Image (cartoon, rainbow, N blue to C red):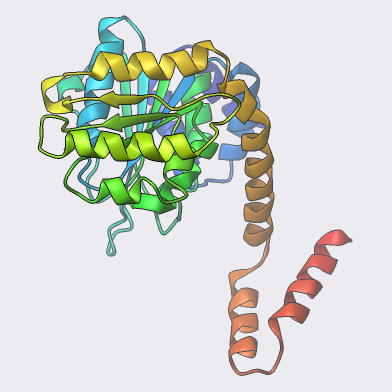
Length: 308
């Protein structure tokens, strides 16, 4: 570990926002020294509360996140927001970006907003989101909010990162059907009906409650259903209270072991892939495509190489 990494870690722990911004870029871009930096910072993590905000496109996740940030700042809490956006097909960067969202908090040192591009990562979260959340945790943020890209049922990865996951649904978009499907209802610790002033909100709530009645909950927890009108700030306090109740009862601790089991596997898989030269992968792919070799033999050879 280099002296520069130690110095950067000390600046981040001391609250240096420029050092934090540079570290966030290093983590997102998977720069070589980012692992050393995170290794140095990891003992200082485990204090922040991570809230996941997920749901279908157009559900109002950004507006709700913005209101949650406002509520937390009014309480004097420091906040980091990781907003995961679709990737530009040209630049690879986030299409929306933090310059568009949450401009109310521009210039507030108590709010650090980072937009990340998915860069093809499935599950609604960018591959480096977990490391980014740890970085903000180590930097002393009280809350880390993860807002996903909005791709529906593929967003289950948020539940593997967040202490508590809120699924945002809206009336009139088929969410009464989508909510019942596996992968959405199962990841929600709190279910939020946003735009609850619109027609169909009562029907949506009945459908959600009917779906919940068919299940047995997780460890005795039945996800509460909260109604909000986020663009007017209505119900946001109730949504935050419901998420905090999940934390207060210690239910997030039941998720921690499963979360780290998944993440350790993903980290190991990613490091193995990074260790393979891209030219070798492309050569192997060409051999399989022409049926000169089978993929099972190739993968077995790679595993044997790692085993020794």
